[in-house]
Image (cartoon, rainbow, N blue to C red; front, side, top):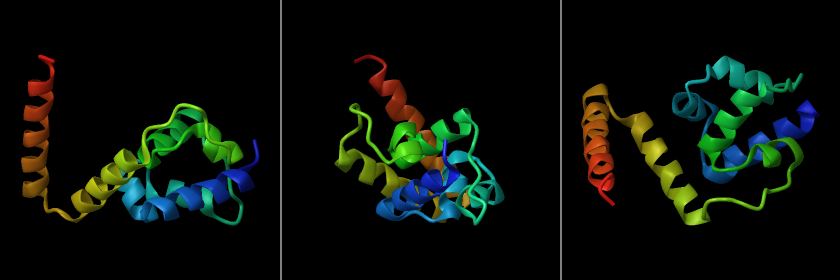
Length: 115
């Protein structure tokens, strides 16, 4: 695997989703410094589990991050954009509001279990 390709594709995915490295860090729980290593001059490659977490947060496949080619199975672009917008908004909320959003999300999840 080539770290330079990963770096280029990660940067492109961040840009297309309108996310910053800091926001991706919050979304994934991966330290910003670690993400910076994947985007820096040395362009190191993450382990597979970290690459999968990054890909999921960006709504792309690991295949895309590594090679630049999309896998056949992808979520719709509209859903990806909506999820990205939700994450960007969550980053700006204070802790109390995040707890409120979490409670509402859990209620929605519970409601969906009967479907």
